[in-house]
Length: 230
Image (cartoon, rainbow, N blue to C red):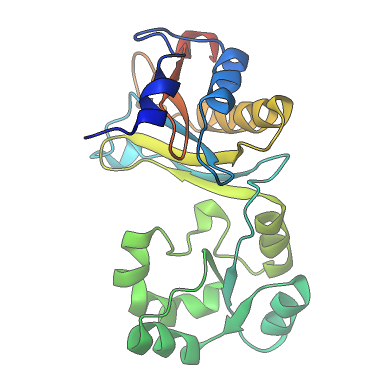
């Protein structure tokens, strides 16, 4: 992959093979973010899980204390009183079958998170094949299948993020923006790491956090010493 001049220059600030403390890594990520827009800071956490086994899956959600810096568009599948509740809480889109059809017919995806009440999951399942691969399928473990739609919407607006293993047993999540202070990014990162360590499946033996890398959208990765996070 060809890298631009800015990236190559920024990467010179990071020692190859170095493992940094959390605070130092965050400082380097901010320093090496050279894009003209406010880049997202992302954490990439490689675990010792084997996701092919059901008892080694990780999936959950956590509210970052300082949010993600991104305005999140929320779609809620609910009806009657619960639909009114979702609207009052500030959901961007609320509905039922008409929104399912809009997604099916118009390939409409102007939303970032989907919440559904349990009684709506029967019809939401009809679009599982398109929501699933995009990571948008509501899930009880992530708190997005719930009768408490007010809490779900409020938590998401406050900075709730979902984490899950990908096919290579890595968790990829945003922890804020480059414009955040180092303290805000450190708080968010620590909250995420604590949630993931708590979610460690009992079936996982040996080292749990194999590697932890922080990066900005366009910047080079900075590796954190995982031994200092446990």
